[in-house]
Length: 153
Image 1 (tube, rainbow, N blue to C red):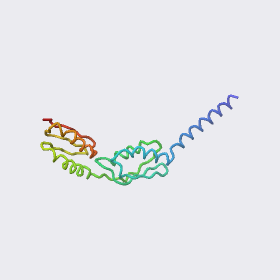
Image 2: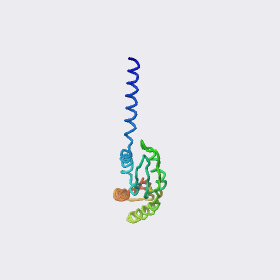
Image 3: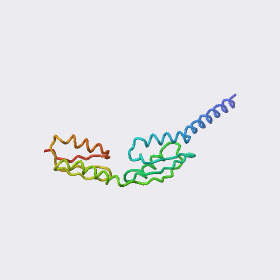
Image 4: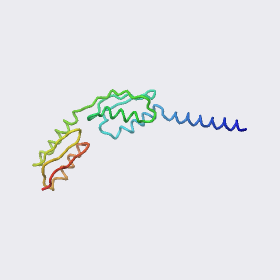
C-alpha cells in the first residue's frame, strides 16, 4: 500500500512539473515580450519573433545602450532560452530632441537647455507665469527626465 501511494505521489508531482513547463510556449513568451516592451517608447521600432523559445530582435531602438538594455529585459522573461539581438541604436534621438527643445525655449528669454541621453536640463531664469507652459511643452517631447534648474524671477 505504501509503495502504491508513493508511486501515485510521484506521478502527480511529475504531472505538475510537466504542466508548469508547458506554460512557457512560444505563444506565451511572445505575449510576455509584448507586455514588457509595449509601453516603452524606446522600443517602438523593435520587432521580434519567437521560435523554439529563442527570441530574435530586429529593428531600431532609441537611446544609448538601448540594444543591450532590451536584450537584458527579454533574457529575463520566463521561458526564454536565448536572445538573438539584431537591433541597432538610433542615437539621432538626442539631436532630434535637442532641435525640438531649442525651438521651444527660444520663446522664453533667459532660458537655456542642455540635452544629453534623452534628458533635458534647464538653466537660466524665467518669469514664474510662463513656467507651467514651458514645462508642458517640453514634457510633450517625452524626454526621460526634465531637470529644472531655472531661477524664477
